[in-house]
Length: 126
Image 1 (cartoon, helix red, strand yellow):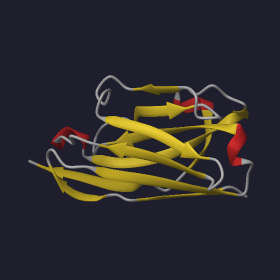
Image 2 (spheres, one colour; image 1 turned 135 degrees about the horizontal axis):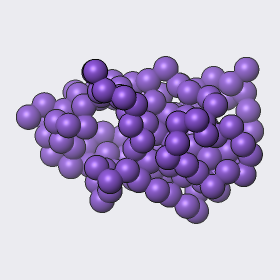
Image 3 (cartoon, rainbow, N blue to C red; image 1 turned 45 degrees about the horizontal axis):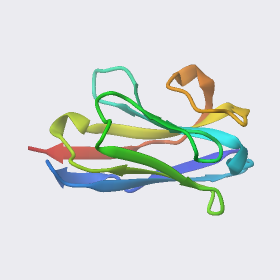
Image 4 (cartoon, rainbow, N blue to C red; image 1 turned 120 degrees about the horizontal axis):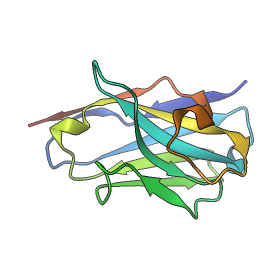
């Protein structure tokens, strides 16, 4: 059974930084693409960033390009999201996800991800 646990969320002032972590167990972490999505109250879940299985390919949503960085450590079975220059509109629950297929190149589509964490709350105050 796959377990995915996010951590690192919290309250931060606008302009600040946070680093989210997603620890994965129960599957061969190194062979799956990972992604981060977020959801604000009353809004649909939104793509934030994705990284392919070996970390060589990344992609970002337009609203976070140049501010967020996704990475992974396959020796630690962990994915990360470094968030800099945070804005109040970045507030929401952040979810990590693992792809359905092995050796995936990464995706911005929710349906391409079959395993999800429980989410971690990020609140950015103005």
